[in-house]
Length: 175
Image (cartoon, rainbow, N blue to C red; front, top):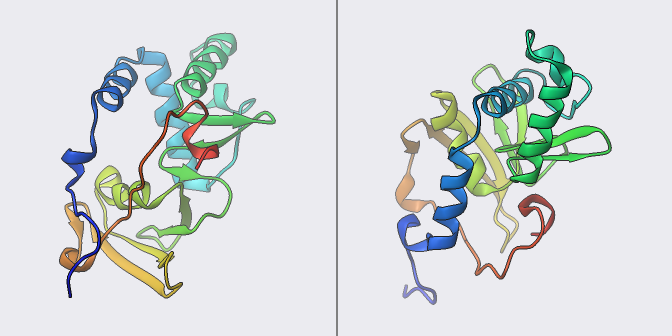
């Protein structure tokens, strides 16, 4: 069957603006990096949301005001999403149910923000996961077993990525 769409690899989808944004994010200061790591670890261990009041306790030895400022920097750079005093998103994880459930090796379920984030979880954790979702076209349930080096049966897996306009909001709230 002939495809009615163009198939591109991930590298073809990267543009200069996207690359510049990620280079800026990689330049995080050490405290912001530690805060991000701690919040993501909390999402993995307990799920979310994470109260921003609880974040300083995750980093003993750092002043609460410094940690709060680092949380604000992470939110500003769209690496986490804070609303109502809670971290609702710590990429790749979301506190609220999404269309992408990631089953961790111990059987705990976490929600990924999007398909790309779900597919990145095994590499991030260095462990296999099961991703549960559904086809957004036909609604058929999907279950993908993925290892750190990629999904099993990768030939048959496809992620749809639409054209993105000028993104002026948080990625997690503007899709």
